[in-house]
Image (tube, rainbow, N blue to C red; front, side, top):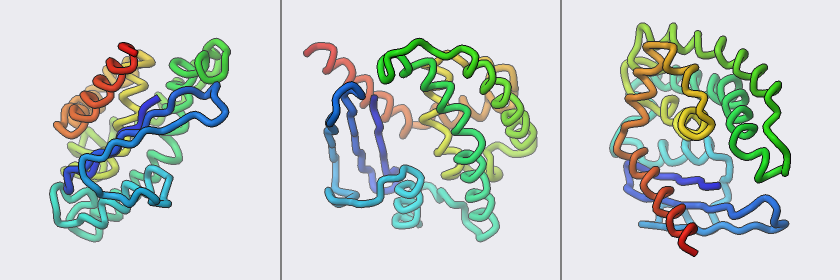
Length: 202
């Protein structure tokens, strides 16, 4: 399982590799291209880290909270939608399809996947309506709200193979194609693929 974080403004990357849930301790490897965060950095929740980096490097690179107080409020609103509505469904579906066997030693619970896909469809109808009027979730600017959706959506579409919930919605699919093709995310994918290839050769 891989977690890659980046600060586009500062040009820094961090790679964490979790070997196996079957190991009581597991391990993490860290790769720093530069030192954005102290080694003993104590914020561990991904959204908190993302907010911290966005605030710390405000004025450098993409304005991930927008440029006005209203835009920032809209970004925060969609971050809440992602964390409270979208992510619980999308992550659980992805976990069932990708990790249930390796992490918990059991097959995918298809009834859970079916139930959550139905729930996710309703959530994505709201996204489709929003994206009919705006290019991105918080408006016509790329923000942290869009960025927060990328990792789990990549797993949902490209690994769990549940992309039909996106391709069946024109504006939602266009949004995903846009945000997932950003150079910063493509770099993340390259790092993950290189790490996977290295592990396969061992």
